[in-house]
Length: 161
Image (tube, rainbow, N blue to C red; front, side, top):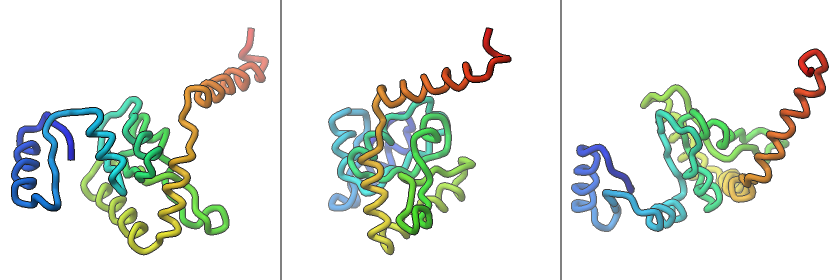
């Protein structure tokens, strides 16, 4: 884990690291290179953000083949497509899980689904990883979509002067 801001969580991270040296590492503070290494080394990224206007961490995670489990808000809602194992003739579709509302119960439900998929459906998990890595999150792609909105608006003559 990496982060800061909540004194109780910071102390928990320190204590857990002390008691479980071989299984847990808690980095209190923020360090960009370390955050990327942590993200790249994980199977899943949990982002239960209350508010996230853009969200870059889930994009980094997908590029590193780390599957995101996020609260469905802001940029997280726009970039993480819920996993559907039955889509595409059983090949699956989606890049992770986006849960809502922001409650412990909905977050745990999404995590249980993710963990179950990871443990019991390796081919589906591999598909999630590959779709995340191949997702086009470039500005060029975003600009093309934005231009499309203008084209659609100009197609409806009553709203064009």
